[in-house]
Length: 58
Image (cartoon, rainbow, N blue to C red; front, side):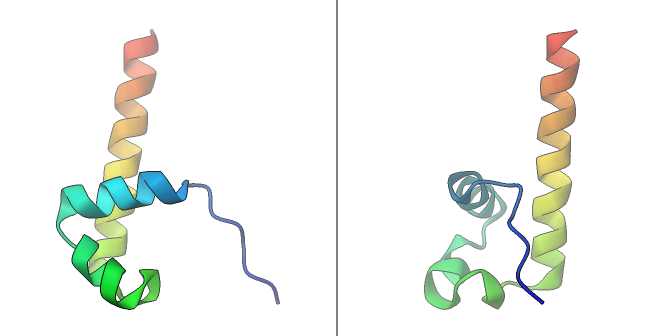
């Protein structure tokens, strides 16, 4: 089974990781090294930003 292509760009993920404070882990260990909680927080923040952007367009 192949890997799915991610929806978030690499740059966006890096910015979120920096904002949430775990970018050092990403640099040392790659994306596979982050905790599940951090990945969840990253997705949560991405959804919040998307919702903000949608509300600003209305």
